[in-house]
Image (cartoon, rainbow, N blue to C red):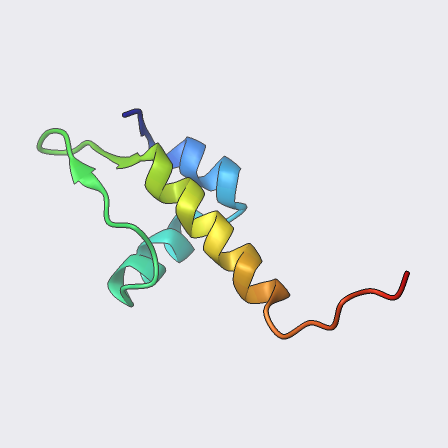
Length: 67
């Protein structure tokens, strides 16, 4: 299991820091793990899963391309 910090989360998702925390407050994003009094990190596989879910939602209901 690998933990990643906010800058890496932002790089991977394309989200701004404020959007990450907004989505967390709306229960639409993985919650961070507290590492210390002022440090948090996310489980890398949970972030990857969230990205895959967003891609799946985008593709759901889309017609198959004609070949």
